[in-house]
Image (tube, rainbow, N blue to C red; front, side):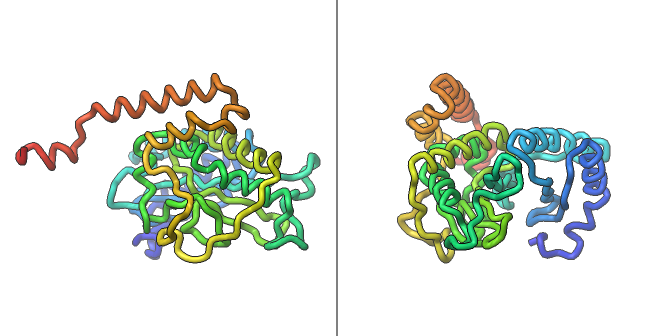
Length: 286
């Protein structure tokens, strides 16, 4: 497990320093980077901003990382799962609502349970209720769903918990003005504009519907029974997106139908491909 190796961060520092400096030079404030679980796997964190600005930063960062790495003879992938034996790569999305002046968090309430305001509880309840329906916006490819495996740092249950990284949603900043939701379902391959739009739509639906937030899950979510499951395949996510009244009301039928068609094409193309695994398993056997 390279995440705990003393050289996991330093051995790639020549590339990571260039990436941090280059991204900062592009006007995107990088807070930090660190080595992660897999060989060559790195985490990079960018200063928060409004949703559209953050989506722009996400897109520019990905392109910049690839360019800078290429100049140093390296290749970078943002596939959610590039090797079945290694941990996948994620894109965790933190969200909070503030007043128009950007001075006061509308999620923070010192008197609320865990420091959460009623608005925050409704927002998170909406994200939980509609998590399965919006999963395609967080995991848009066939490969995306190969990341959702128990014990691999990727969530398999669309539930929430307090500082528990086995759950699909996590409460962060408990009891402070920086309190926020963290969605851990998204892979590194997501489109930030679509992912943010879907998560915000789900949260706002929770506010409109005045939903009650379920109790936080305690324990290892991988072992939990009868819990809300993250869709296991692209095919399952397509069916849920297609039937989602919430998404159609928020984004429009034309938008949803377009992305359903996109997802169905991806699934169709995958279904007719012959993979290396099939050849290794069956070339001589059959």
